[in-house]
Image 1: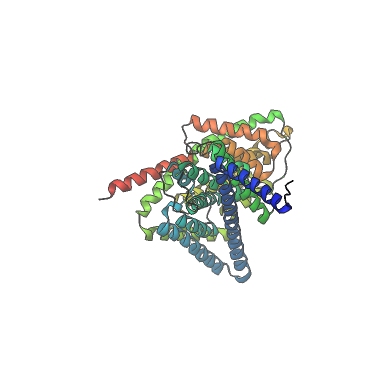
Image 2: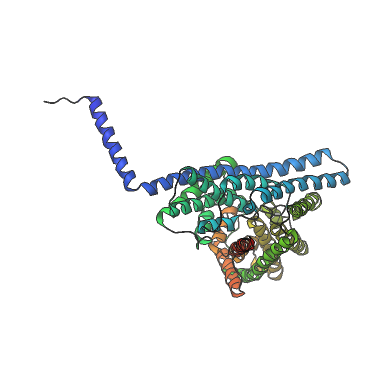
Length: 463
């Protein structure tokens, strides 16, 4: 009779287990490795993007508190506010123009171009330039959002990971680039579902949909959002009243609101493109002109921070005030028109910042105006103007970006108003259909085409 020791049994069990996992790994090696790398990308993107948001908030708050506590005379206050914001903006424009021109603007068209293989992905330049350049531009008070930089930073972190692990498969590289983009957006807005859908819906021409690619995107978004919640807490990004389901008879008003946003979305995209062309002619590819114009714009927003704060920053922090502080219709319309003009100026100038947040603020303003008018005309319906404000956020996003499902999910996750899903669907549908009827094009698609045209023109002009 053969006697087997306990140690021999343990070694046999360990050997069988290792053989099992080796077979599993060899059979499904690429998918498993991709999912593990998606975890790494989500973790890194979550950390970097969350601290990017905290840095912007800390910089703005510290500057405001220092000016309020140390400056008493109005003239020195305005002068110092101008100089500080001008200096911050100068840093942002200089970093972009000097080291990474592809970091200008939102960065989302660059990510889409990289997924198509027609734009470079110099992560070693873009990540620090977008972080510190965006910190300077957004910290100056300019009307820009952090979501565009967050998406570009996340995508470049994805490329950094693939380069670090020497991954040469094109499909895997594209999958992990998209995973980083989703992770960046999830951490920017605490909206993982919207981030996943943004990649699937907005980046559908570039995103190669497979089971493993969508799994990687989902995992990266979840991990990044967990990091965000661990650091910032689990509250909604925008704190608004929780509205009940509106009466069915009011749904026609939401459809009408969507049609209004369809018209405005086309106009807004047109203004974005025209102001980009204007600033390009103004700069004439001169770094000196870029820095003078950029620092002057930053200084102006420094003054606005002191005297008209409603006309500064991306606007996410202002959304609750626009909805609940009982502004008059005329005041809301003035803020809406002023912020529209200032948004296209800031974004068109090439500052490293996005337009998600500014669009959400504009949607809130116009939606609130529409809601107040309906409440005055039809008081018996008993509908809150804030419902139209929330619907307006998703509608403008859908009309400009042409990603209605992403807009719906983004607004719901950011405000926790799940009972408004039907009005949101109707409003975004109306906005999308009307924008298409008017011949409008998705903003990021247009921006990417513009960059490709400029790239071809530069190549043709080279001797």
